[in-house]
Image (cartoon, rainbow, N blue to C red):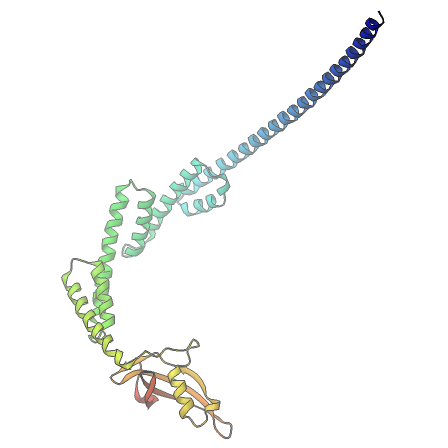
Length: 301
């Protein structure tokens, strides 16, 4: 009997502990549910606020975009497509398909307006505008046809200009003749005269450049444009007052039958400290000055 009573007492204790645990678990779960519910409510409210803010912003942007588009329409209709494009550029943040379409229209109208204002003889500008239109409207054969027409006129005009220019060149200016005939070949590949002239001048130029090799390396102008190293070296070795030598200016490098030809101005101080300057021509062959001539010996055209 005593053991049975002890057993019942132990069972009561266990049942009491179990009940307490269950109550604690239930309380914890209830707290969790409440907190979860509060969090979900906050998230729901925040999402509603976000959606509302987005709606308000969209409504504001739609209103502003409508105003911009109407303004652009009026500008285009009154012949001010360029100003319409400026308005669109200031409102890039409102971009959508409708505004893109309006920009497309304004660009087309602006290019057409520029074409109307451009003299018919200005083939280069007209070709540029029609090229832009052809790129804007690839399916518009009229723009492509006009571009081809002005491009052809432009090429013909440039061809006549270049041919007149090459006719005025000295025949012994092989490089200039060769370069222009090369341009003419590109403008009109079917003209046999241009190709034959180019080949003839190219051969003469190549032979001429090969002949110049006997003079050695071409003298190079200093970075400040005042001297050639070969001339400055020669002057320091041959002038009376090399310690006061100052190189002042120099011409481009030319060539003669004797070698490379350069003109240089220099100054120096005499024994009394007085400064004097002089301009001379120097012939350079294989990096050495081989001849010195007075300033009046040559004239540069």
